[in-house]
Amino acid sequence: MRAAAWFRAAAVVLLLFAVGHTYGFLAFRPETAEGRAVWEAMKSVRFSVGNTTFSYGGFYIGFGLFISAFQVFCVWLAWTLGSMARAGEMAARRIAWGMFVLQCFGIVLSLRYFSLGPAVLSVIAAFCFLMGALSVRRSAG
Image (cartoon, rainbow, N blue to C red; front, side, top):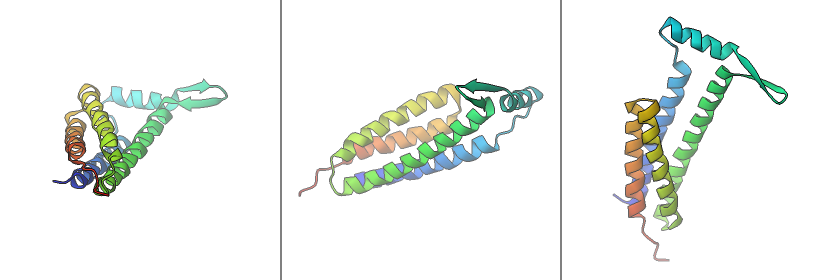
């Protein structure tokens, strides 16, 4: 496969990841009484930073949505890498290596703190970025 195809494949995988993450964290509701107590405490316990008051639940939702936005940006970046690779722009290779390293961190963090599903998606995305980076060719022009 050509570099552009690898990067576009990565974009599709990352889009699935973004949709799954967003749905998963927004739909999550604890099943146990203890879990529900923690969830309610996160929503009700407030703390101040400077002149602003926050809740841990608000931080959870805010960070979750921020991660979703970041994931959608990564989808766009992966798709753009495909266009850059097609044009023979060697910067695509450097960016792809950065995305590969980012996905490798995602693998480790997913296995440590989350589950196998996100780790598998990160493995697939990392492989796509690796193959794309190795496949980028300089344009003749």
